[in-house]
Length: 115
Image (cartoon, rainbow, N blue to C red; front, side, top):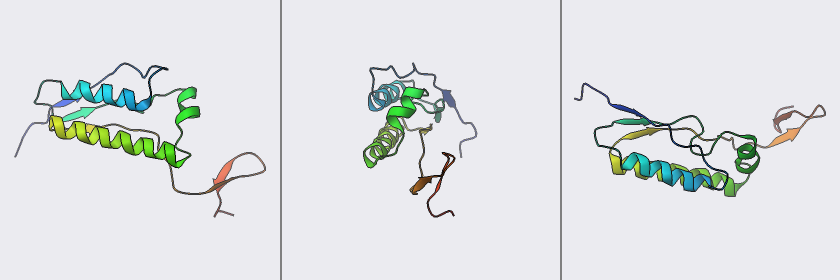
């Protein structure tokens, strides 16, 4: 049993406005795969590689099946990078729930099955 865990903290360049989340994902995965071996766990910043901005939320909220599949593709890229470098990768993207919502009179969103 291994007694020591080597953690690699990754602070990649923010996703550029002309770069898609998949392009950013591939760039970040390449960074981790080409790092020296021996790292057991890579830790990425919150919402990496999607980004954190009003534009990101406007363009990439997983409100459609197409956008939800984007997050599945990001997960697949990260999983492949983890296999290639023999490490775990800790990252987060924008989550969603498979639930219908309705807008109330005051403008707030509530689950449609909630009365």
